Length: 630
Image (tube, rainbow, N blue to C red; front, side, top):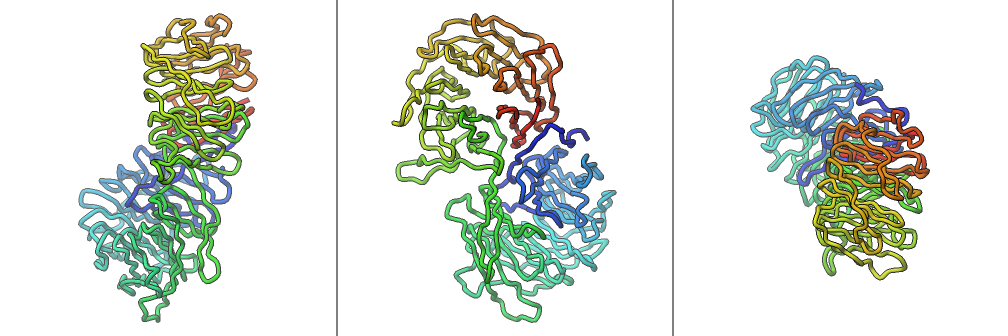
């Protein structure tokens, strides 16, 4: 239970966006009475407010990648399913988020689920050995009937919220299967689609349900009997028809409109024909999101509160407004990381906190929300700008010196160092080897790669930056730190070398650590040097002669130390590791127990940065947390 209790010193948290996969729909849902979305990300369930970015929650109880999560109609419970076929039912209104039920509902991944209108039964669909759909009781996991009829993976389901209860499921076998119950058993199947049935949804009244598929068709059915009411809903203006796979659909709260999201990069709004209409066409309005692949629309949801929402393949959550004559417009876009965060840095001018991710993207966040940094660097001459800032994992971030025109510098797996202003990247340079660490100098930055150590001068206005000096090494550098009169480089062999910042010539070699050097950080006043290693050791050196001041004392971490960060006063040092914990050590009282934050980030904390008295942490859960440790 402790992993779900919020620390009183957790000031705010910024959560990732949903896990997206090209060619697959995202099952996006909302709270029944509040403006909150719920969606899966990796092994986590994310609940986030559409109104306040830091009003969110991360559920960390699953052992496998989560495929779907959904609130019960009464709003008290959440059901979530994962790739192992496990269904978990846990409380939403309890601060400990107590687990009510865990059962392996299917033999394979659960990809969609829905509660009944009484919050007593749950239908789950997905992959399995013969059983791809099942209805269970919410508190015992007992099966309610036998749901057969599909011969391939089921990927969507809809539960009629009013009696008599009905369930409709869609599958990769191109069929919609209709069940009556409880106990549920197959009534009939429908083969109107000619490709995957990606989404089925009931209207709030239960009188109608819709299915959409990769064949671009929208089919309407009678909600009670499951008979086809309209085999192919078409727009009055045929030019507005979908031109790509339709991934998702959602009815408006009053049931009069149907929204659809498609691979043709549009969201369309359809007027739902009434029961007496015999026409196969209806009014349709459309909103085009652009031409790039990331603009594909993979999900749509229509919360009772908060308005229509769609999700792009890029992970952007688009809040939409329905205007007069059902015209659609974007009111705001919520962006967030979609991959574990690997690096973090604050800037000299306090432009916010910059974070880099495993997929090469870089974000800046502040009081309002995440902001994704774009790049003004074409991928090729005459080409369009590349969406990710790097073509691989971001390995390091650091602040640019005040004299430079840049705010932040980043290094990545693409063997490049890039330079960004507050909002976008506009310069880059290639380096010899894969860069793994950065440290700021007064007039530039120093970097280490798998082949050596170099520096980039950034003083004065552009021309574009270039490597002014690079020195190959006989060891494998893994970390670097810099002060006004020294550069310290750590190696995979645990070695520590003090270099001249201007020539990068070796001045001094310190006694080696027992493990690979993982982080090096000079205190802001330049008087202390902190070094951590893979053997969980944190050593403190004074910088006049680089004598060890403290060792074998700050050894509380139980896994590889990943990051060190000094408080601006130089009186506190924060450390973190793969053990998911954060420690804040006092230099005035080094013998005292440190301030400790347990379970800070699931699967490990990767980087720390101070912003005044607030400590920012990021981790493999793709979250950024702001703490008040002092």
